[in-house]
Length: 611
Image 1 (spheres, rainbow, N blue to C red):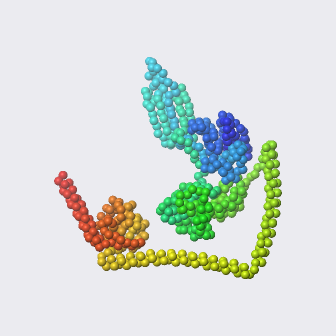
Image 2 (cartoon, one colour):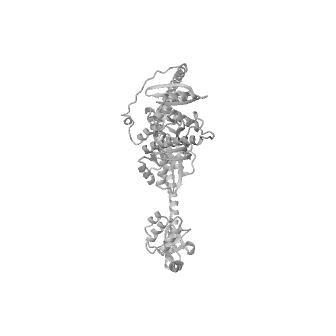
Image 3 (cartoon, rainbow, N blue to C red):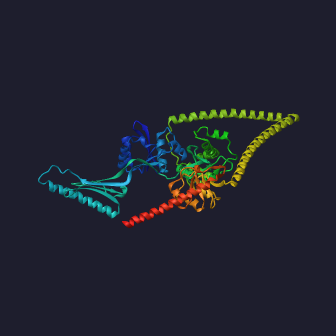
C-alpha cells in the first residue's frame, strides 16, 4: 500500500491510500493522519513537500520511529504539475485529492526522494533500571548485584552479535561488582539487529538507530536526466545544457578547456541525448563529444548568423559571445524537436517517463515499438458529478460554440484572401514585357554592384595580407644576413609543457630552445627536452626548482632572456652573437658547481672518517 498526502491548511490533510485497484480517500487532522498511517501500515507515505507536514527534524524522527514506513518527498527537482505531465498523469492542481493521488502514483513509479534521518548504524545501551538509592549497611551488596546483572545482560548481547558476525565498537563504564552502563555501536541498520527494547527488575536495554546530523533526501531512482548540450569550441570553449523541456540547466565558458573536463562538466548534470552546434560542418570537438556519449548530432543546414543567435538567446543572461553561440545551438536543436516532443507527451500512457521516451525517439526508435510489450489497463471509475462540475461543462460547451463560430468567420476571410491572391497573381502575369525587362536589368545591376563591393573588400584583405607577408619576408632577409655575422636561429616553445614539446618535431641535437613561458614545467617535462640533446635553453619567467635541477644534471645551461638579445617574428626567433660568450660562462658555472659538489662530498666523507 502507498499513501499520498496533500495539505489543505489549518492542520487538515487530504489522504489517498492506493492498494492494487482499491482506493481510499478522506480528509483528516494531523493527529488522525498519523493514527491512520499507523493503522494502515503503508510501505510508502508520499507528499509534495515534507515541510507541509513536519516543522522540524525531531518531528520527522518521531514519525519514522513510530510508523516504520518510508517517507518520500515527490517534488524536489520539478514541481508536482510538471512531474504529472512528464509521466502522463492527469491532475487538477486545485483538487487536493488529485494532488495526493498523484504523489502516491509518482512514488509507485520510483519518482521522488526518500527522507533519510538514520545512518546504517544501531546503538544499544545497557544500563541500570533503578537508582541505587542512599547508602546503608546493605548498599555495597545491592550495588554489586545490580552491576553484575547489567554486565551479564551486556555479555549476552555481545555474544549474540558475535554469533551473527556483526562488527561493533563498545564503551563500558565499570563500577563496583560489574558495569553501570555499556554502549554498543553496531555497523548494521536497525532491521538487521535481532534485539529489541526490554526491561528487567535491575536492567534496561534500549535499541535505536543512530541519527544523522541533518535530514538527507535520497533519490528512489538513480536514473540521470536527459539533456541537450550546445557546444561552441575554440580557445575559449562554452557549453550550454538544457533539459528536454527546453529549460536551461547550466551554461559555462572556460579558456583552454580540455575534452575530459567538458565531458565531466556535462556528466555532472545528466546524460546528453543531443549534441548541438551552430555550424553546418561540426567542429572536431563536437564530433568527439557525440561519439563519447553515443548521442545524436544536431547541426543546422546553414551556419547560424549573429541575428538569429541573438533572437534565440534574448531571454537569457549570458556572459560572452561564446556562451551565446553554445546556447543558440542548444535552443535551435530544441526548437527542431519541440513539436515532436509535444506529440510524445500527448500519446504516452500514465506511468511512462516522457523524457526517456523522447530520448529513444531522438535516437530513432519508433514510438509504437516502445509500447508493444506494455499493457495499459484502463479501469473506468464512476465518480460523483456535482453541480460545480456540471456548470464547468456547460461553460466549456459555450466556449466551444463560440470558437466554432469564430472558426467559420476566419474560414470566410481565408477564402476572400485566397481570391485576392489569385487576382494579384493574374495582374502580375499581365505586366508588359518591357516592365519585366526593366525589373530584370535593375536586379542584375544590383547583383553586380553587390559582387563588386564583395570583390573590393577581398582585394583590401589580400593587400593587407601581402603587406604583412612582405614585412615578414623583409625581416627573414635581415635575419639571414644576421646569420652571416653571428646571429643564430633558436627553436621556440610557447609553453613549457609535454604537449608543446611533443608537437615540436623540429627540435634536434645541438639546438638552442627559447621558452616563452617557462612556468609550470615539471622535472618530467625537462627530461623530455634533455632527451633531445639540446645545447641550451633561453627562458622568460621563473622555472620550477625541479626542472632547473634536471637541466643542471644534464649539463644544459639555462640562460635568462634578459642576458642576451632576442628578436623574432611569428613562429621564428634569432639570438645575438653574445649567446656564445654567455653560453661559455654558464657552462663554466655548471662545471664549477659540480666540482664544488664533489669537493663537498669528499669533505663530508673525511669528516665522517675522523669521527
